[in-house]
Length: 275
Image 1: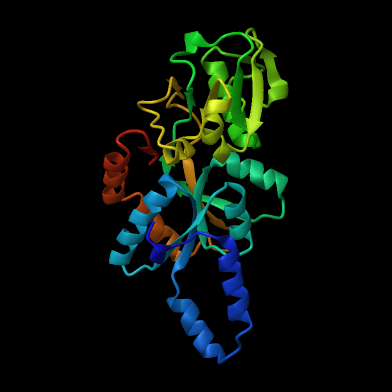
Image 2 (image 1 turned 30 degrees about the horizontal axis):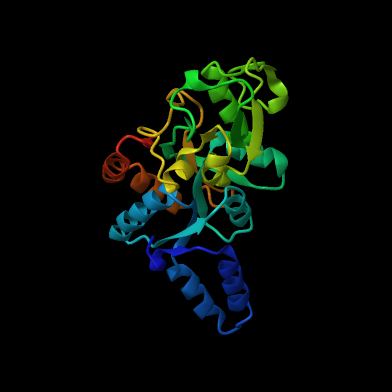
């Protein structure tokens, strides 16, 4: 992403906010500055950031100033949004948001509209197909509740393990009812799994982190998640911002034919428009 359209380190954003608050000055000038400032949208590194770069360009044509704020994890963008350091974020699916709200009941965040679908997939540097999985192998999955449950459902759908309910997005390791090959489940931070791929036998990786690691679900995966899943990504804001007219404007821009064409051509089918 261009430096002019992103802030990589949240601390820098926070420091700037504190500095600005302590500067004083005329209140009218402060209000004018706020009115002219770009709205900040949190994204995770990789595809979400790349798509938002395109949205920034499309928004500029409609005189809407948008600035992408890039994060390296899933947790901080929701914290920053709830703390009003962001106007919205675009980096998660509804099950993840639901899990976040359940864990943080004080968060006032809402789903605005669908964005894209990132197929989760199984990758390996040691085996070429699912049939090569042997007894005692180690598989890495994300350690957060939502993506970890999703990974387990992918494994269950492929017949690698059995779980209580193959449709329960809240599935955890404790819900595994069958593990015929006695696989060892290694739970890691979702962003760290691609780097740990050589240390395990195979892994279930989120598409955005896979692509950052130059892993293409369409070419490099040994198996890909079914398309009919509940994990379409969403655009999220606060309850206070939900009725802001700029949300409707952003929805129109994000779900425009121009942006859909960008998604289709840029990712070549590895990521799909969810609208």
